[in-house]
Image (tube, rainbow, N blue to C red):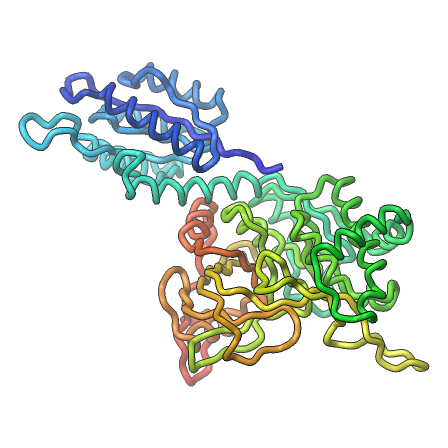
Length: 479
């Protein structure tokens, strides 16, 4: 169950400013109440203004007792710089907020913006030992400038709150040879508070084989209701797909896991006579986010995107690019999602046969979930496996009617922006390769560049800078 973000509000003032501070504060409280319903966060506000050091200490303790995740300090009017020195010690993420002046001439009624400027500067220049930063806000809650900046923060901090303390399962380790997908569980715990239970493939296999006939039949019916099935050969694998779905559900529930990374090959083919792609797609669509090849950091990145967008994410490879229309081809063998598909996803044979047997040759396997992406905006974001850097790329999936593609889950993404800025396809490809980025690309519907960047800024994870294309060899460590 997703955790709600809790926002706290404190108003700081100086008594001799003549503007109607109570009216300004009440307007702000009512506006945030409306936004709490619209954006789905809890809201708590201090009733009394903060004027003195004593007030500030009481307000800080009040917000700590309420366990607010994000504390807004509104400069309802100008106030003493002593106040932010106390309130800035909050454990919560911090926002500083100024409002417009409420008259156009005569005595300055509030001097709110100047106070926010003062408080921002004090945090950095006078109290660097706190290592406390803040995001600024300006306007009333109904103003577009305030509302857009605030929504970005709510989505970003909601993602962080839900990531922290998560519990993942890694089943069967990494897929053989995919050693760029390694991760350090100690760093994952240190930076995110995320724990990973490592489970043997044999344990999943045992659960797979023990599923009851009635459970399998019920899941088969669920599958048939959500997919088109290409042929009788694929239909013959539905029982195994249903077994796997049921087994992973059981595993996920027993461990209360927020997501699973499962090594999909070669053991599913060799030991269970199937491929798990269709089952992973089905599970992810229902909220049991399941990634292939044992890629824990892709799972982390997908969950980050899901908490931002409130929408299921999907994991793709980058398999080709087109310099003619500045697009990239995203593909995976068969984890097609009904949330992304132009039509109902199709269960069909895996494009790549295996394993090889002496008596029967290369064996065809199923089922995979095949689809073409519908036209939609999308965001790709991935934290590096070193957990110290990240990138974000956005664009729009194009109509596939006039562009050839390959079997599987796939689509061409154009109108590319890297960190919100347009990027040439050769600069993008060069950046990916010169900076040695991992080959898995988590995708979510919608344009969420700002939200991803804000998540990473709060967490102190560095952006992977663009490396413009050159004809000569580039060593990124010297760039």
